[in-house]
Amino acid sequence: MKWLRLISVFLLTLLPATLAAEELDMNEYLFGHVGDSYGWHITTINGHPVSVHLPVIVRSRTTGWHVFSSKHIEEGEEYDGFRIAAKGEQYEGKLVEQTPDGPVRPFDISITKNVFGLMFNSLVLVLLVLFGVRWYRKHDATQEAPGGFTGLLEMLVTMVEDDIIKECVGPDYKRYSPYLLTAFFFIFVNNLMGIIPFFPGGANVTGNIAITLCLAIFTFLAVNLFGNKHYYKDIFWPDVPAFLKVIPLMPLIEIIGLFTKPFSLMIRLFANILAGHIMILGVVAVVFLTAKLGVAMNAGMSAIAVLFGVFMDVLELLVAFLQAYVFTMLSSVFIGLSRQHEEN
Amino acid sequence: MILQAAAGAALGKFGAAIGAAVAAIAAAIGIGNIGKASLEAGARQPEQAGHYRLTAIIIGALVEGACLFAILVCLIGINS
Image (cartoon, rainbow over all chains, first blue to last red; front, side, top):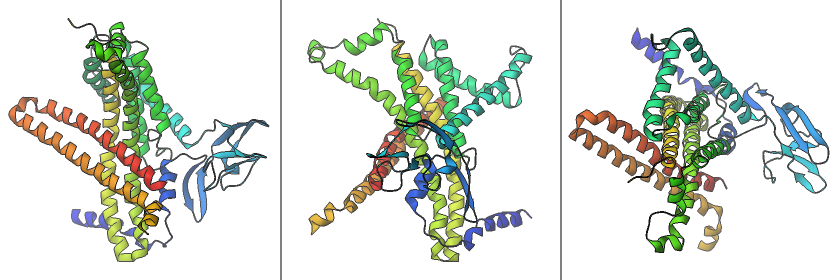
């Protein structure tokens, strides 16, 4: 009986063998899924696209504020003078306004797919944490231990606090705990929601370099705004022979280092999450790419693609947790380095 | 004739593909070294094995960061 179930599940992976063979544009497929867009396209049923239409909020220099649903500009149509620039044009994929001087970008604060994903994931994070807080209001934490989801939250928070923050920041860790814990859970929740393939997950928030740039900027501010006098002395007038200080070689290297550390934080998180998404999308694309090669080839490759895709998804779970862990750990190490006391 | 072929965008894509392959080799060598070192250290001092495992995973993520930077550049090279 067990074998029968296993074989029937395996046969399910061969179902895509009856696909109609249509040419797949890899570029548009990949970057359409990991990139940003004005509406959230979910699926296409019978040639009719099903998507969530998000608001477009723009301010043109000549006509002022415009707020409208993205369904008006979805298919490349023009609305109120605004349209999405087509392939090959200057601002491809972005909203442009047609002026006598050619297409120009208006001031654009639309709720795009990534912005909506960011807001939704932040709401999910706030609800998760507030749900855990409820238990602590009703019970005395020193007398009993929580079970269930609150127990899982406590386990995670305690792990981050004890193993990362307390150890790496040093004696005054309590001041930085709020920021570091928030960073960890923000990155973790957003990474996990990016792996979920259907709406409202799958928005690739942390795979967007603008968002990781903001996280890196926050770490940069947390490190440099509250730095010790000793920290700044080490950067601008380090304890090295005079010929390195006067040129000034060491201070220049230290200042460059000031910026490369958050830069590497940004690139590491962005590249890991983006690469993971692209790999999973590529594995799934195998199903569509082999559709033209015949039913048997397609069935075999689809089976392999499904199994490999499951493996990649589980690996992405590990990467989601690990990238949040590494970001928080490196941020706390940098903060700890900026609060060091003079060693004798 | 070779100049004409070289001037084409095909050379850019060729270079990007080679770059991605070299980045994959670099990641494999780097993480392989980490695995080797952590296993050897764990064999010498088994009670610290958990510490070594955690350190190996963290350093693996850092090495992966550098290689993925190269992969990103290659992706951009292939697409433009």
